[in-house]
Amino acid sequence: MVGPIAVCLAVAAGCTAATPGPASTTPATSTTSAPTPTTSAISTASTTSTTTDTTHTTPATSTTSHPVPDGVVLGNIVADLIAGGPREAGTPAEHAALDLVTGALRDLGLVTEEEDVPLPNGRTSRNVWATVGSGPRHVLLGAHIDSVRGSPGADDNASGVALLLHLAGELAADPPSVRVTIVAFGAEEVLHGHARDIHHLGSRRMAARLAAEGTLPDLMVSVDMVGVGTRLLAVRYRDSDPTARDLLVAAGDAADVAITADSRGDISDHEAFARRGVPAAMLWRPDNPAYHGPDDVVVDVALLEDGLALLRAFIALAMST
Image 1 (cartoon, one colour):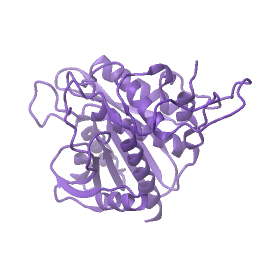
Image 2 (cartoon, helix red, strand yellow; image 1 turned 180 degrees about the vertical axis):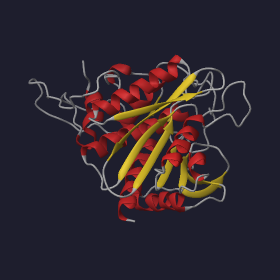
Image 3 (cartoon, one colour; image 1 turned 180 degrees about the horizontal axis):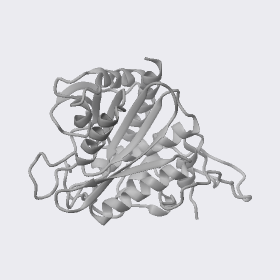
Image 4 (cartoon, one colour; image 1 turned 30 degrees about the vertical axis):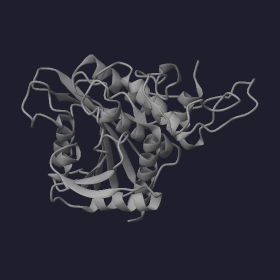
């Protein structure tokens, strides 16, 4: 059965549940911890077809339709991504999660692309992306899909992937006047058993390729850990161009979401782009006590909704500046 949440990702903001009564028994401000793939936003996504039918017909027995809250959709995407357990780079679990993302993007009618990311341990990860919208400006939004060994990675970083998949659905339904590339990066975490700098391998590979092609984006944001914590930060890489960071702060003001400007080292996928002169920033909540641990299985869907509202505002500002 295709549940109402599965329908929701395909039609984004216009989503309605196909059953009468409340769209979900989960309040929009609750947390999500247990995987629920039968009602997931991406559990029905095809991972093999190159064409996708995004038309959904309401069953004849339905007489009333109800909006599915964004928080429910986001929580179910997180649940489906963590259902296979830890997603260490180059493992079957990481590849399965990337297949889910590919299928979900295709089910939105988007054309997906991917590239392999060879790892020093002999395994292979990959990046998956799709671009929507048109115009002279290009915005790249990325979220890493891998987690560290032993951690299910609900917050780090199924939360970021969930935001971008939901946003992709909205943009596919109403394409913006700016090109937006949604990327699921592989192999962001420090590779187990290797030195600390053996990380960000997916984003570094993509940034290097785009630089060689002369097609680096005008703005880049890494959405990384946005489902737990009281503080939301817009972080630039050290003393790099602050434009993307400052635009995130302005988007927070526009969306009435509290966010603070910050500068840090190479802690996420924005680093590779910032090093090449791209205005790049990280959207991040730093205060998860379960960080990199086996208990990273819970996200606060109200915080995910805040992040979604902020990214909507960021795209709107990118179109107007």
